[in-house]
Length: 268
Length: 283
Image (cartoon, rainbow over all chains, first blue to last red; front, side, top):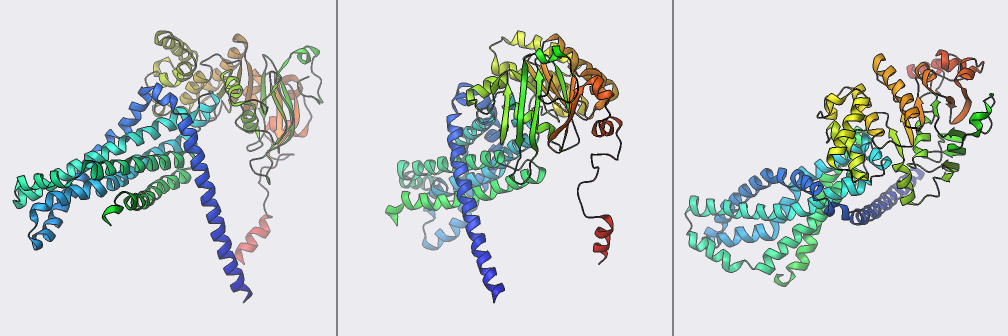
């Protein structure tokens, strides 16, 4: 009996410690975000640093984002046709593909892909710089590593992801057009015309852009924070990189639900 | 006298030189349970080259980190040019760091930059010098360490010893007043070791620097340094100038200088007796 009570007590203690640890870490991350914002002046005064990171985070993510967008658009069109044809509404395929991508899949899938490719790379790079004492060397040289290393990577992520999400949606719509119009034979005028009539600039497109900006801030913060906070060992960097991908995915999906509730509650 | 309680005789002229660095009863630990330093006192006069020696994990590198303000002492004071590091604001600390250079144990070169860019880094960050002057200065520093030909290479293309020499060139890029060397001889071949040792001495004298050298290499150190502190288990256990150390009968100094396995310094980390360990494993 005593063993059972101890086990239950330990279970509650474990939950309490995990909760406290989580809240403490969230506090650290918030303070870190403030420090990054405070140190961001030099990032914009020295655009070469930012451009270099934009290339690494944004340009090098283009292939995976564009290809994924194209294929997801093509699959959406195929799956959409299967359903729409039952109701004789195949002309609405353009609307289905565009709204799915612009409102949801564009920001969310681009965010997940960005976290996997660029976010993990940023975490690994900063973590390894910490492990090999490069960040400490900067500090000793009176150069703030948050301003020199972290802030340019953070802002590169914040700028890149919304642009990548827009390109993802664009390629997705083109993929839907290829399958729907060129492969299946839906009327091209109906595909584009219905899309133009149904997709609202503010309600659909702007909300999608806002989502991608929120995801960009979240993923970029997670990536730089995990790298900066990594235990300076090989396994510490490995664990931090994994945490970046897992935490980013969960945060993107959770934020997506919250944002969707607020943005599209009128249609519920 | 270098230390406040020096047991060995040191000439009066040395005691008259103003201390650049002064540690007074400094204690420090990364966790509350495990102290790295306890009550360390040492002084480094301006313009001198001082070695801090001791076994692995005895707290040598921690002393350097306290001096450059990366860590704060849990007790005692660390003073640089009379000013306490602990009481410095962030701006004062950064101003202090601009006057010092630190050579890290593994070089800590920036792996995304070339050798040239690594050495130009502190110049570009802290000066408004034109690129043509920076180019000349970088090549002069590289020439001093014998690696002018590696300017366009990446750190990954250098051997361990070459990377250490490039890191040394970066450390002295801005001609600092105070230079902290963390194991500068580790992994160097005998020629590089001798050249780097002489270079450290020459730089110290020619540029009027003050230097602290953390190292295991007793033979090379005895050739170049002015004074030596021995640290064991977080405390200063012996200190003196080169002649004093060479003639010392202190058991710790004798064991360290002669590399003897038996003496006050234990080779083995504390553990259960061997018999108990293996009989326990068999059971």
